[in-house]
Every structure is written in structure tokens, then in C-alpha cells.
Image (tube, rainbow, N blue to C red):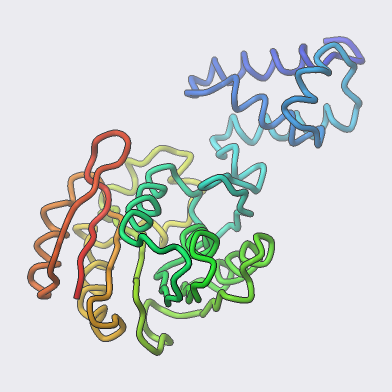
Length: 284
């Protein structure tokens, strides 16, 4: 490589490295990291392919490429992830939001015809706040309480709420599920840890090495947090209030049984874009 390689040259070098590492999306990964290293948009990158890359940008990009080859996810390196059309800052104690969780948002929105209604929403285990903040954005007259056991996640959620203009309607608590919650809610949502402890070691290295394990570990059968949520949710739901939970592959029977055992009614399951049951809706 010359002393002054072009954007096209450094991009190709990274794509080849990622391809050799057998990453699923080498081209996309390389483009996202190069845009971040150069602080430019994707459109600007396309128009700059034949321009020389400065030494500073080369150095930053090389560091990003090395981190990616060590299985650090692209969005961890960038520190940002889009969710439901909005950009969220990612803290170290929050999971990278995944497209599957958009199914939870879609399902909730389909259940409330009046987006302008005044309502109270509780998000349990909020992480970066993608669910709480997105619902605050989609329901402009809602007040949202978000809780997390991690102080870093609480700060991350607050930051995202402020950046996306809903901080005034968002209360974020450092709380172990319902511990510090008070009042009644129209809707309780959660995407809790649901991976069985024994399965953690088999996760992809991007997840196992770089996502916070306590945000993944759902106990021996993956259902610990659901048991705790079902056990107390009715205390905090208004009459006819709704509970909306995301769950993992193959857990639909167990979570449905928990809902029925805790005398929730109108229990329904909803599939993600891959046709996999992903969300449970129930009413108290």
C-alpha cells in the first residue's frame, strides 16, 4: 500500500480481511467503520473513493479493523446503533439492540390505536433505553418509567432520552425490576435476559466477548426473569393493563404457560419477520 492510499484501496483491504475472517457482512462492516474513522457519511464516502486518506484516518481505521477482527461488533466500535429509525448511543452495559426487538415495538403499536392517548409505560431492564425511548417517541403524550439494575445502563438510557427529545417524559430508575417502582401502568414491556446459563459459552464471540453477560443470562432454563415479572406485574398494571414481553427462540410454550399460571388473560404470541414466535401479549 502506498504512503497515501485512496479510500477505495483501504476499503478493499479491510473487506478482504473481513472476508478472510468469514464475517457475514464484510463490505458493510468495512464501509461503516471507514465512515466512522473519517467522520463522513456513506454518500460522501462514495464520492471520495479516489481521494487520498489522511494519516490520522488511516490510523483510526486500522485500529477499528483490528478490533473488528478480534470479534468486537461494528456497532460497539462505532458506539451507535439505529433502532426503529433512530440513532441510539450504546453504553458498555447495554445489549446491542437487534431487529427482533422491533417486533416488540410493532406489536405494541398495533394494540393502541390512539397514539395521542395519555398513558403510563414501564420498561423493565431498559439497557440503552431503545424500547422506553422509542415508545416515548411513538406515544407523544405518554410518560415512561425505565428501570435497570446497572447504573451505567441507567445513564445510557437517560442520554438517549435527552438526545431524542423525550427526557422530560422519561424517568429512569436504578432498580432491580420492580424494586423501586411505584404506581400503576397501562403497559409494562420488557426484553429481559432469556438465554439459559449453559448456552452462554456457545454464543457467537461477538456476543459472548462483548455483550454484558448479566443482560443475557436468564438462569438455568432462561426463564428466571419471566417468573419474577409475572409474579408481580399485576401489582403495577391498571385494570385491563397490558404486558408485552420479548422472548427467545423455542420459549413460546414456557412463557405462555407462565402467563396462564399467573391468571393473565387474552394471551397471544406474535412472530418476527423470520416467522419465529418472539413476543407475548397478555392482559391482567
